[in-house]
Each structure stands twice: as structure tokens, then as C-alpha cells.
Length: 380
Image (cartoon, rainbow, N blue to C red; front, side):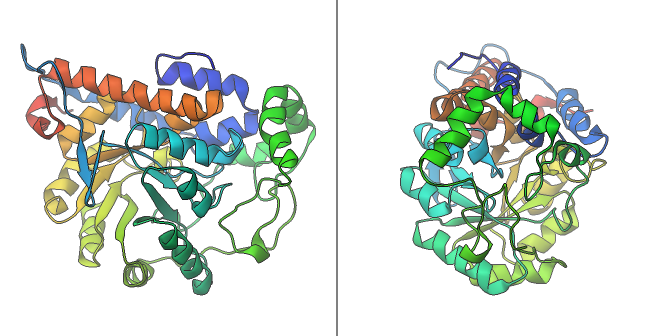
């Protein structure tokens, strides 16, 4: 595994190792990708008023979330297709998160089933749900998740329709995958990925599929499959029903408005994620850091506020925490690390972010993440 020092270096290494269609699925945004640039610019626009001669010799990053204490306020975000960047990629990510004492959130559209992921790691596994149109099917999935020890459920609420990701169409990245001259040639130019990922699945007697799907809908991602429809009119009543069904902690991910945050609290959500889906849904959405303070001030005393989108450095995490988030989800970085070297690569990327956060805390003059507040920030 090649060593990397930061997010950008990890991204470049992952780009070399992955076929274009898979890398772009992870890396890119939607439409004109102004959202990607805006997330980055919004975080960069926030500057720090650092304290001199403070920070101590040892910093404390411990964060308490939903009755558990973790080594850092970082959560590995749910991402589809992680099992295509590395053989059993979701398991590798879960192990890396456990090694760093932070939670891993498994996705509905994972290549490994939630019970396989939770069983392979001694860390804390959360689960992200896309609600299918057939209620019995998603109820069965939640029961599977509960039975394997999942106690924190994340419901994604900013995907009422599929985003306009035109590059996926060009790359044939859909369900099922479409094979053309370009992506076949691209795979041929990445023999290490073919042998290390696809060939290993085949050698194990399986082809990549959405392992959390019900058996009747679970087939190879390379073959036509029986359609499993998402809830077509997803709304707040569905979230209320989900709250009644799920016995553990419930988080709604994809909140960007205070009125939506209030609705989430009123229906009993234990947490929200202030998120624009990493710039992958609505290209013209606001950046989370632009609305985070208002949302924290409105509902922060009543629910756990988490943030994500655009995070590349530990200093980005520090800024979101200083505004008022209790923790930060990171998605692309750990996936790049996984693509480079499986569990060690993902663990290295998480370690990079933790080290950068530690340095930023020291130079900001904070010994504990609970000391981070808006007095440290110069907002645009």
C-alpha cells in the first residue's frame, strides 16, 4: 500500500487504481458540480481566530453520541458500492472504523449485508435506510439490522428522486451496469482492480450484488434484475412511521432548513445530519456550514446535530464542531483509502483526519473538543 499524507494524495492514488466509472461515482457531484465547489469554498471561507500559548500537551477528541463514547467525533458515512472499490470493501471500512474507535454506518445499497458487516467488526455499526415502496420489505431489513446489534438508524431524506448525475449515464454506471467499449477498455487498463476485486468475488462463488435486498430482488449488478422500487412519495408521515417502528436511535440525514429540523425533532428524531449529500443531489443547494449555526441554535438543545459534505481536512471538522455540530460524517476520504489498501488504507485516512484535527486543536488553543465554539471563528 502506498503511503499518502492527506486527502488529495489519497484521491489521486484512488483515481489511478479504480476504473473511471467507479471512481467518478464516488468522486463527482451532479449536473454542473457547482455544489462540490461551493461546499469547498464555504468551508475555506471560514477562518480561525486562534488562541496563543494554549492547547496543552495532549488533546481530547472523545465524543459521546447516543449513549456511546467514541475516540473521535468522526463517523464513517454510509456509501453505496463500497464493495466495488475493494473486495468486501464495507467490511474493510467497518474494521478500519473499529480500529480507530469510531462508528461505521453501513448503507442499504452495500455489497456486503449488514449482518456480515456487523459480524466482521468489533466496533459500532450503524445502518442507513432507503425506504422501499413495499413496507414489509424494509421492516424485514430493519429487523435484520436490529438482530445483528445495530442500534442507530440513519434515514436519508434528501433523495425523493434520483439526482441528475450525467456522468453515470455516460459511464454506464446504472442498474444493471451497461458494458460498452469505453468501460470494458477502462477495466482492462486496471487489471489490479479486476483481479483484486471482481475476480475475488467470482473465486468466492459470488458476484457483486446489493446484499441487503430481499432474495427475490438480489442479483448481480451486471445483470438485469427485478425492480425494487423506493417509496415514490417519501414524506414526513413515512418518517413518523419509521420512528414508530424503529426501537433504537433515529437520525434523519439531509436537513438544510430550520423548519425541517423542527419537524424532525417533533416526530422524535434523536439526531439530524445537516447535509447536502456531499454535493451529489441538488447542485444548487446551500453548503451545510452556511446554515449549521441557525439549525444548532434552533434544535441543538433537543437533538444531536451532526454535519457532513465537503470535508477534506481535520480543520474542516474543527470548523463544523466549533459552529455547533456534535460530530462529522466523512464519506469520500475513507473510500479513497479503502481503494488504496483495504482496511489499512481506510484506517490510514481516518488517522490522517484525526491527526489533522489534533494539530488544529493545538494551534487553535483547545485541549478538548468541547472547548470549540464560535468565538474561534471568523465567518464570511
